[in-house]
Length: 358
Image (cartoon, rainbow, N blue to C red):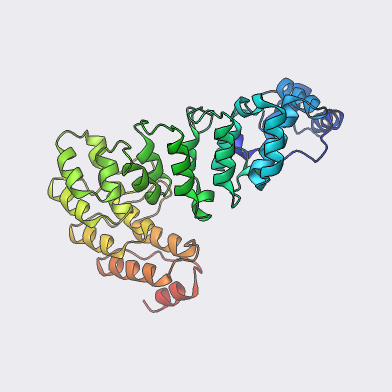
């Protein structure tokens, strides 16, 4: 279980109740020993061990630094600026404190709504004000949390978080952090944005000096930069450049890479080829471009799906995307000779009608 998968604690958590739960887990056979049951409970709520979890519960029962941190985290994600201000004024050290959960995040990390416990991944409308309050109080703008492999500062988490993006506040929040000295020197910053489906954040940070390598230039569609970086790029960077250019529909870059010997069967561990990524990105013109250059039509990804199979899955899970996009992609793949699965099952009325008409 990742730290952000943690379950929320009850409103008034009681250590004795959790001890009883652990004993019940052993009695039911769910765990072979009390120690294993206690460890499992601790991890369920985002803690490394039973001693850390039980210590956390004891501190919550009184007015302690831990209880004040938890109250402040709740105030941040609910947008309760008044309560947060009162807590920071009463305890100036709070702004530099860290969560006792596995991620060891500071309060500033919570404005990103990313990497911390799922139930606190929320973006209030006043999140920029909240961030400013924390920064003014002395929050470490480049403090790292132990999420996604470690070393993640608030700016990187904001740049890859869907919640501020959906709230329309991602770039304002990024600018607030930059104005307060947030570093953009991490070499993988643009890559993280692109890998998490945030090209606007990637472009925003690139325009402010974030490092751009060949894959980043390709994903952003910066053709001239891609030309300049191509000769010195590693084979892995050339591969990733084609994959990201395909995913984000950067056709000029795709053409350039193909002209310079790009492998259209290339993939990372997930098995997704450039054609798979063009399908996933929903770019019919890129799909057609790749097919004109004989991109493999029957190569499967790690899930066993060909590009056409991926198109059907994407159509079924398009989250409101226009079905006409997938029909255009399916038309292109079928015209190029891609095989139709024998029993694809119901997908959506437009796609079902397309399949029935074959």
